[in-house]
Length: 99
Ligand SMILES: [Zn+2]
Ligand SMILES: [Zn+2]
Image (cartoon, rainbow, N blue to C red):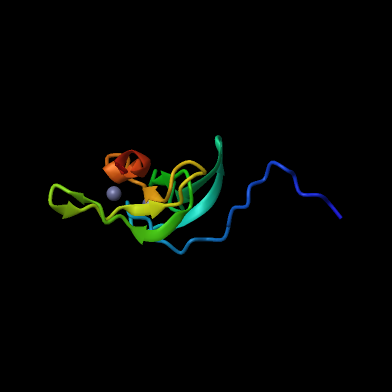
């Protein structure tokens, strides 16, 4: 019996089945990148879309300029709850939104 490395966090590495919002061709899949695990578009030879954490499959409902943001939501970290993947969206930093 091999012991699992203690550093490994419990992360679901199954494919997400979520279509890439950028090119709509690829799918968001777990990828080992230079900076560790990331979630990137499977068509990444031509598409640069990626996320730091697993997308949840939900879409951001935050209102911006009278439109709903609609970007993919992604899992948060220990300190940040689920958040919008769009860095331009205020909901990207929901911990700062809370009053
Ligand atoms: Zn893509
Ligand atoms: Zn958003």
